[in-house]
Amino acid sequence: MHPFAAVSAAVCALALLPICCAAFAQEPQQVDGMAAIVNGDVITYSQVRELSAPREKLLRSQFTGQDLENKLREVRQLALKDLIDRRLIIQAFKKESFQIPDHIVDQRVHDIVRESFGGDRNTFVKTLEAQNYSLGEFKEKEMERIIVSAMRSHNVKTNYIISPTKIEDFYRKHRDLFTTKEEIKLRMIMVSGQKDTGNAQAQKSLAEEVLSKLASGGEFEQTAQIYSEDSTKDTGGDWGWIGRNTLAAPLEKFAFNMPVGRISNIIDYAGNYYILKVEDKRGGTTRSLTEAKSDIEKKLIQDEAQQIQERWIASLREKAYIKTF
Image 1 (spheres, one colour):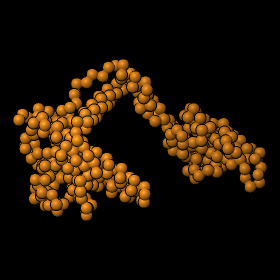
Image 2 (cartoon, helix red, strand yellow; image 1 turned 45 degrees about the vertical axis):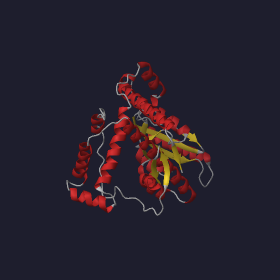
Image 3 (tube, one colour; image 1 turned 180 degrees about the horizontal axis):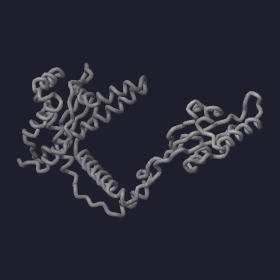
Image 4 (tube, helix red, strand yellow; image 1 turned 120 degrees about the vertical axis):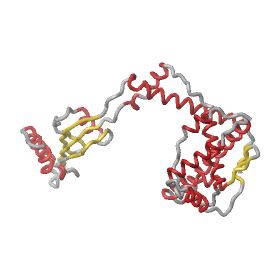
C-alpha cells in the first residue's frame, strides 16, 4: 500500500460546501432495486433518486404531465451516469492501492460542524440521525467525494502550455466574448400616422411641427409628454438603457448610429412617425488580444483538462462491465 501523492493538494482545493438541516432530505421511496451493476458493485434506484432529488424538485415546479415525466427520466439518467462514473473512479483508486488518511475526512467533518452548525457537533449528529444517516455513513460518503476529486486532479496535468497560435485563433473566432454589450439611453416621440379622421398628411404635419419645436430648443422630455402617442409618453418618451434587438430594425439602425445628444429627423416606419434622441452610450468596446490573453489561456487550459478527464473516464468505461436496468 502506498500513499496517494496528489491527495493533499487536491483536498485542499476542495470547496467546503455548507450543509443545512435539509441537506440530506429526499423523497421517501417505497420501492428500491438495482439500477446498475459496475464491475460487481451495485447502484440502487434510491441512490439515483437521492442524487437527482434537488433537480427533480425544481422540475416539478416547472413542468407537468408528459413533459415532467420526460424531464424526470432525463435527469435520473444523468444521475445514474454520474454514479457509474464515480464508482469507476473509486474502483480505479482502490486498484492503484492509493490511500487517503482518515484525518482528512475528520478535518472535513470538523469544518462542516464549525461552518454550518456553529461548532455544535451534537446538533450535527442529530441532524444526520433525523435524516436516517449515521456519522459513519456520512464519513464514508465524504471519503468517496474526496477520492473522486483527488483522482480527477491526479489524472490532469497542471503544467499545460497553450501556444500563442491557439490563443490568437480563439480570440479571432470569439471576439464577441470580449466585447461589452452595446447600449444606448434613448428617448422617443411617436406620432401615429393614422388618427380617427384618417388624415395621414395632417399627422405628418404634426410630426414636422414637433420636430420644429425641438429644433428651436424645446425640451425633448416635455415635448414627448405633450405629443408622443406611445406607452412612454408619461415618462417623457424615456426608454432607458436598451441594447440591440430591442427596437424594430429600421429604428435600431438610426438609434445606434446617432451621436449622443443628437435629435433625429422624422423616421417614417410602419405607418407612424418617430423622432429619436440618444442621451448616452456605453459598451460596445472590445478588449485587445493582449488584455484578453490571460483569460483565454485559462479557458483553454480548463477545456483541455476537461477533455483529458472525459477521455480518462471513457477509458474506464471501456474496460468495465456495466449493466443498467
